[in-house]
Image 1 (cartoon, rainbow, N blue to C red):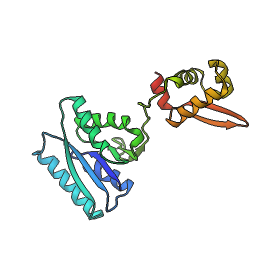
Image 2 (image 1 turned 120 degrees about the vertical axis):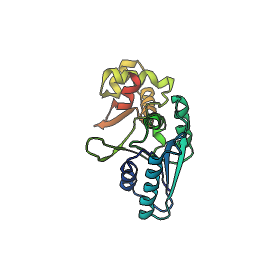
Image 3 (image 1 turned 180 degrees about the horizontal axis):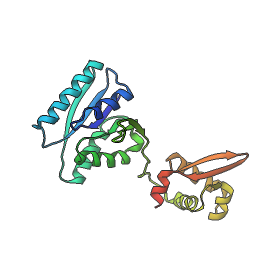
Image 4 (image 1 turned 90 degrees about the horizontal axis):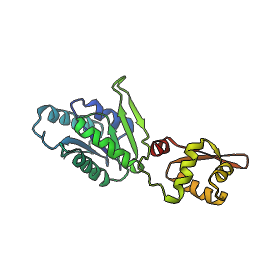
Length: 210
C-alpha cells in the first residue's frame, strides 16, 4: 500500500502525473493538502473534484482525501505537514505545486523525513516533466565519536582508510567503525581498490559540514 502526499493548487497535472508515473493500486491512498482557510475556494474545489474523477477512472477503489493544514505561521505549517507524514509508512511525496504556503513547509519536512520517504517527485516548470528526486538526509545525526572522522574526510577529499587513520591519529579499526556508521546514515561512501578501502563524503555530508 502506498500513500501519496501532494499539495494541490489549480493545475491538476501536478497531482495526476506524479501518481501515474509512480503507479497507483486499489489499496493506495492519495492525500491532497490545502490551506485550512480555503475550503470554500471554488477553483480549488473544482481541481480536487477533477483529480478524484481522473484517479477513480484509472483505479476505482483508490482512496482520495483532502487534509487542510494551518498556514500563516511557518513553524505551525511545518508541524502540521510533519504530523501527516509521520502517520503513514513510506509515503510518496509530490513537491509539485500547490500554494507556496504549503509547498515550502512540506519541502522542509520532506528533507527532515528523507529516510522514511519511498519516493519524492517534482514537476518541472521548464518542460512539464515529472522527475524523481532523492533528498539528502540533511538532519542525519552524527555521533560525537565519528564527527572528527567526518570532518577529516570532508577536508581531505577522497582518500584511503590508512591515510585517514594517520591524519586523525587513530587506529584503522577505530576509523573503520566510524566510517561504517557514517556510511550507514548516508554521509560517506566507500569502495575497495585492491585491498585498500577508499572513502569520500556524500552531497548530504557537504551540506552538513558547511
